[in-house]
Image 1: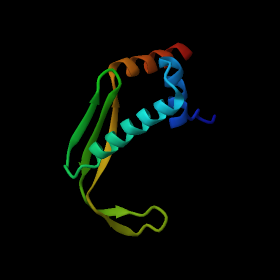
Image 2 (image 1 turned 135 degrees about the vertical axis):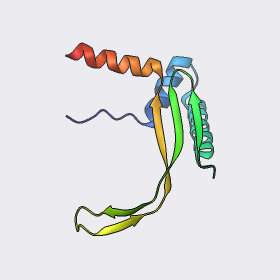
Image 3 (image 1 turned 90 degrees about the vertical axis):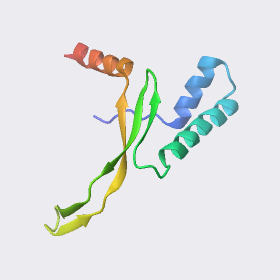
Image 4 (image 1 turned 120 degrees about the horizontal axis):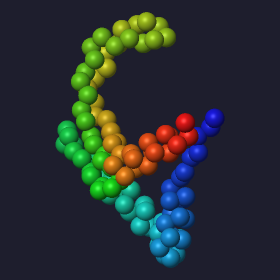
Length: 106
């Protein structure tokens, strides 16, 4: 079963109709928020968090180097350098709604 995909455009349309703001203005607002969050998440700090109450937390976490990782296609050992990755942890409201919906389908 194919997942439903929502885009930035869907967020703009739904939010503009919900708030009664023209789509052009809402597009500027949504793009500005995304750009600001991107700037915050790409700071050179090793660990940082963006906490959006009732929605979730975006967190940058460092990963360790893996000197003996294996390429599954060739079985060749490769070195994977340390890097940073973005983690998302949903807030309680979203988590509860997702679990509730899943349990109702059973």
